[in-house]
Amino acid sequence: MCGICGELRFDGSHPEQAAMDRMLKVLAPRGPDSGDHYLDGPLALGHRRLAIIDLSARANQPLLDTETGNRLVFNGTIYNYRELRSELSARGHSFVSDGDSEVILKSYAEWGEQCVEHFHGMFAFAIWDVQHRQLFMARDRLGIKPLYYSHQRGRLCFASNPQALLASGGIDTSLDAVALHHQLTLHAVVPAPRTVLSGIRKLEPGTTLSMQVDGNKQQRRYWTLNAQRPAQAMSEEEWVEAIHVALRTAVDRRRLAADVPVGVLLSGGLDSSLLVAMLCEAGQQDLKTFSIGFEDQPEEKGSEFEFSDQVVARYGTEHHKFLIPNDQVLTRLPEAVDHMAEPMVGQDAVAFYLLSERVSQEVKVVQSGQGADEVFGGYFWYPRMAAEQGDYLERFRKHYFDRPHDELLTALEPAWHGLDYTSGLIGERLHREGADSFMDQVFRMDTTMLITDDPVKRVDNMTMAWGLEARVPFLDHELVELAMQMPPEMRMREGGKYPLKAISRGRIPDAVIDRPKGYFPMPALKYVRGEFLDFMRDILHSRACRERGLFQQAYVERLLAAPEQYLTPIMGSKLWHLALLEFWLQRNVDGVG
Picture 1 (cartoon, rainbow, N blue to C red):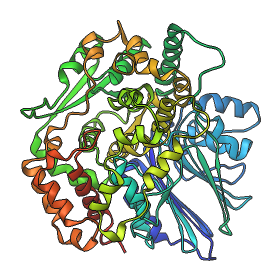
Picture 2 (cartoon, rainbow, N blue to C red):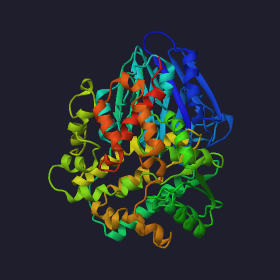
Picture 3 (cartoon, rainbow, N blue to C red):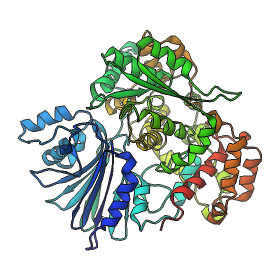
Picture 4 (cartoon, helix red, strand yellow):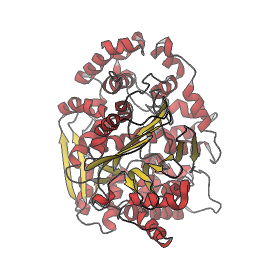
């Protein structure tokens, strides 16, 4: 929905107007409709708006609560804002706007820091509490909306992406050795609070952070996910019906909240096709759907139009198909990397970037099927993990880690060698309380940590680069809470996502339901050859890469000599992992002073 930023000084000085202007300029693509800032002694708040709910200037931010004097900057959408508004009005609060932003301010006035527990939605926001002289920040339960910050040198600075923080100046850009380990072993996932840059952190999902003007801070986790069977057993039919009801609520009773049209990114897969079916069943008229395709390679088709076309034919949506020539993919890749909050190796990032460019010319809001695979067990590695016996960490590591610790030591120069940080992190996460089995632990960890800093972040970054808001119904927190109680083996039936397949029967074509699991087809980047290989070779042979001193040259040359032979257990290119990290640093960090 928007881009937010701010600064709180603890050293007696005031934020600089020029720094705020630089941050807002970086955030402009996230909020192309308007922008403003607010200064109050040690505090500065900035906001770039994408107008979705209450399109009038009354909802512009930083938003003032005239009753308390508090100020808000907010990114996201509170789907139950109408219900909360009615409740708050009954409690004596008055409103001057019709949007969800003011509901956050009034909820804070009524419930204080517990206000977040009343919200259904995706959000990252900061409230300047005038009376207590504190900055209160919060992030939604599943981390759908980002919130980065830097706490150093007598100040706290926050923003929707690291690029805005870097633009503010004075940020430590040295690399974080622990985060680097995660980056190269967890498919570029660096779990919160770390990022690859030592001076930038991110607020963990389901967490609030309060900062006082004297520099004291308090952090609170307000939500945890349980992955245990319910007290009363449920039949298969009861589970499917419960999921159906919860998904219907997430899709058409919550994520249609907008004063502008809402479309659907229709990939041709089960998840997005089911969203179209449910929206049309709910009576959505003139639904706009969007698909993207690329040129074929000898080994693989570059589009899934044959499947999305069947869904369009059944429901008569206003469909838009975009075919992108392969020569545009590499040409536009640097732009996509510039909009990555952190290095992302998923090759569909550029696809989302190019799709979002076209879609943003038609609508401001879309629903996306992201999250269904993690919540309902759609990936091929889940049954492989389930079939293993023994130590939880070994079962997970074998089928997910990009490279074992010993190999990482051969990839990195000795100056970056350290402990096996990723095994330590994952080992701890797989043994937390509140999960009945190994696979319960896996699904919970994937949903609350791994997905946040891979596909969810990717969708937010690439859509918001074009002022397009993406909503993810499969990550509705109540739907996720219900799904995590379902026996894992039920979710993994029929090749995964059994409940969704059962709901889809009769609603979408069987050819879509029964097709093998597909991935966003990006042949030009999937097959490491030709111009793509040359591109990576140039990056890894560049002077900047040599001077950075991250990678051992022998390891780099081994991958360059046979790039398609060196794949991770989940079929990622090990060469691309190195090249993308280096390229992101060159595009986003080098030269920042």
